[in-house]
Image 1 (tube, rainbow, N blue to C red):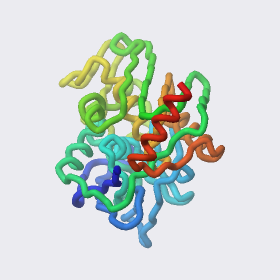
Image 2 (cartoon, rainbow, N blue to C red):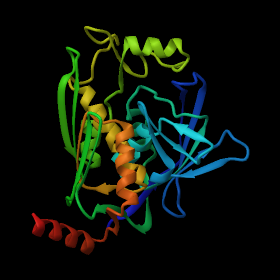
Image 3 (cartoon, rainbow, N blue to C red):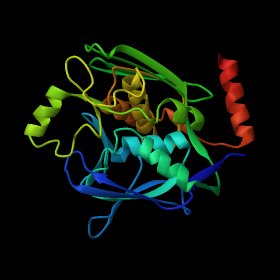
Image 4 (tube, rainbow, N blue to C red):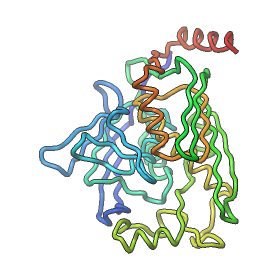
Length: 299
């Protein structure tokens, strides 16, 4: 049997919002009753609680957000990536602000804090979504494909006309070990000219070299350089791991994304959900055996 997990104890992180430039506090609490992820705008009175469900999520240019239609929390993707990557099914997240800080631009600060807190096994069987049928979607140059599979595998391809990026691809089977080793440290990136333009418009009040890889026309401006040569595509995998969790439960599928975006990820997942193309499965050892056997027979 495989049981749900929640965080072992409260996790608190504080940082500066990249959009607002304001100090933001994030608290991740254990959730023992019920399951799934709940977000709370703890800075509001009365407090606003928004469940992590795909209908409550929107994909934006360069970010994923959760909303109840009136109140919003921006930049949830890196936190969701850490929770999904570590296999945490239930948590109560309090956010004192309109956005979640980028910290160093990766999921590593969350991963380190969550691993230090440990986790608690809940007396409820783990639930996952499986595909009823294969599905793909294209939006402009972006493309994403979902295929039935007994395990979650994620492959991403990117292409940028920059000497340090060019065309890059990366794939992994999503397990906590692979997530920790291969992608959780990969930082978001942006181009100096675009960042300066957005800063002049007042869009990025807290953005600097501490929370993203910044590139000019020739190279990286961050004095520490890159963590891996292909850190750019690894971060896109990190983002996709986070966006896949907006269904509220892990999705077991073979996922391939090319030149994709948060908008495309969320749009595709909303279509999967509203079209009834996913089914929820309670993961007992017998269920998992039958699912694996079914996919092997179809192959």
